[in-house]
Amino acid sequence: MLTTMSTVAIELNSSYYTTAIGNSALDGFSVIEPENATSALYMLPAYIRTTSMVACIIVMILGIVGNLMVPLVVLRGKDMRNSTNIFLVNLSVADLCVLVICTPTVLIEVNSGPQIWPLGEHMCKAVPFVELTVAHASVLTILAISFERYYAICEPLRAGYVCTKARATILCFLAWVAAALCTSPMIWVSQYREMRMVANGSAEEENQVAVCLTQADTVASVTFFLLLALLFFVAPFAILVVLYSFIVRHLVRDSSTASSTASKHTSDTYHTRAKRQVVFMLLTVVVSFFVCLSPYRLFIFYIVVTPAERIAAVDSDTFFGLLNFCRVMFYLNSAGNPILYNLMSSKFRRGFLRLCGLEKEESERRMRRRQNLHQEEDFV
Image 1 (cartoon, rainbow, N blue to C red):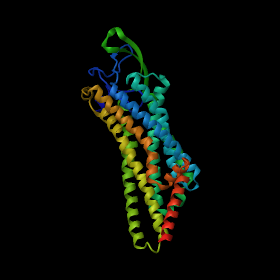
Image 2: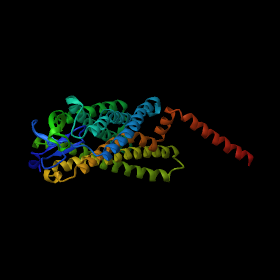
Image 3: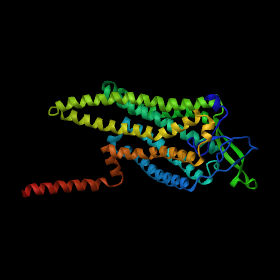
Image 4: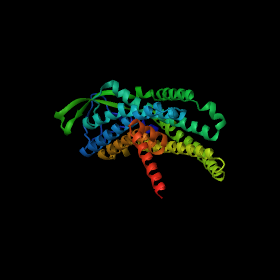
C-alpha cells in the first residue's frame, strides 16, 4: 500500500482532519498538481455547510465557557488543588486551544469551499500543527492521569511521593514538549500553494486560488502518519485498557472488603466511595476521548492505506460529509469534558454552582428542606 500511496496526495485545508485524496479521475475533488495545472472548484452543498456551522458554533460556545470554568473551579477551591485536577486543568487548556484556534477555521472553510485556503501560508502550517499537538498532548495527559490514579489506588505506599502537585506540573509541561516535537514534521509536510481553479466547469471563469496541501507522496510521509496513529491512538488505548482493568479490579476487591466491615470502618468506606467516583469520572473521560477521536483516526487510516482508485469512486458529498462529521466529533470531545466533570464529580458540581453564584441558593433550599422536616417531626 505504501508504494500505491507514493503517488497519492492528501489535501489538507483548515485542519489535519480536512483530508481529501487528490486524483485526476475524481471529478469535484481538487487535484494536487503543479501550479500551472487547472482543476475544478468544488463547493460544499448547503446542508453540509449549515449543519457544520451550527454544530461548530454550539460546540465552540459551550466548550469555551465550560473549559474556562474548570481552572477557575480548581483555583478557587482549596480542596480541589491536587495532582489529578492539575492534569484536568491541563486537559482543559488543550481543549481551549482546539476550540479557539481550530474550530473558527472550519467556519471559514465551509463558506469558502474545502479546496480554498484564505488564511495565508503561516496559518496553513500553524493550524494542522496546533491541532495535532493539542490532540497528542491530550492523549499524554490522559495517560498521566491514569497512571496517577493507578498509583493512588493500587500502590498507595508509593503514591505519596509519586503523585505530587509539582510532579504533575512537570509532567504537563513535558507532555506539551513531547507532543510538539512529535508533531513538528507537519510544519514541513503542510504546503501552501496557488493553483488555477475552474469555477462552474467553465474555462472562462478560471481563477488563481490559494490551497493548503498535506501530501503523503513519499514512504517517509506515509510512515509518519501511520506512526502518529500507532503512538498516539493504538498504543495509548492498549495501555489504558490494561491500567483501568487493574484499577477496577482493585476497587471491586476493596468494595467487597469494606462492605463486610462497614460498621467498623465508616471512614474507610467513605474514602473508597470517593476513589470510585473519581475513577469512574476519569474512565468516562477516557472512553469519551477515544470514541470521539476514533472516526477521524479510522478515516485518515483508510485514506492512507486504501488505493487511490477506490477513494476516487467515493461521491464528493459523501466524502466531505464524513470528513466534517469526524471534525465535529473531535471538537465535541473538547466541549464535553466539563459536562462530564459536572455530571460525574460532586466536588466539581459544587464548584461550578459556586462559581455561577448558585451554591448559596442550593444550600438555602437544603436548609429549608431540613427545617420543614424538623417542623413535621415536632408536629408529629
